Image (cartoon, rainbow, N blue to C red; front, side):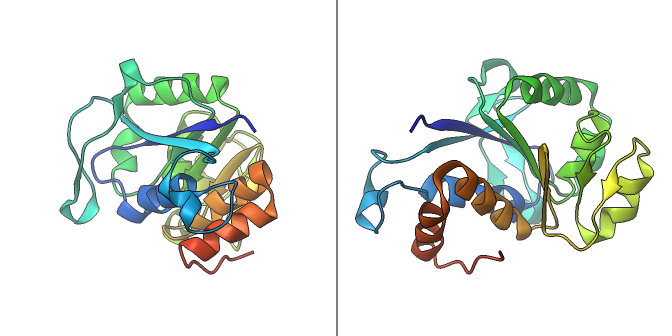
Length: 202
């Protein structure tokens, strides 16, 4: 199986679990079952890295400081682009450079996904036009008001309509497991969930 490169976008005031949850799921996935396989990258189907506008420290919610692996200019090719949420998405929605980068990388990626209010950024970039989508419960009305024929699903944790969106915070892990299952099969997804001791919401 060809490995996928997974890029998770970081920005100031990004929600920690929005990016750390999917990072954990994708980075711990192995095609070989059991704990021992996680000690090497030999059967890893995903190569996960973080990207921000610049390769400089990003301050997430709660004050956690994270150093991105890449900036926009030096990021490698991306198979799966993940845009997390957090209070910082409001500024990102007005950032023409970031929106252009997301739009361009999304066009070249195999899949695009969002966690929480990351869907607002995808909507602002025009990537949810005419699609079903979801977001954090407190931003459902805002997503609907963006007015590009986005059909908001208010009860779903994960919505896949070409672009994958997920509800708030912890639901990003359910989104990640859905992608693992699509790409690697249910047995691999279930084994990964067992390894990190996560009860999947399926």
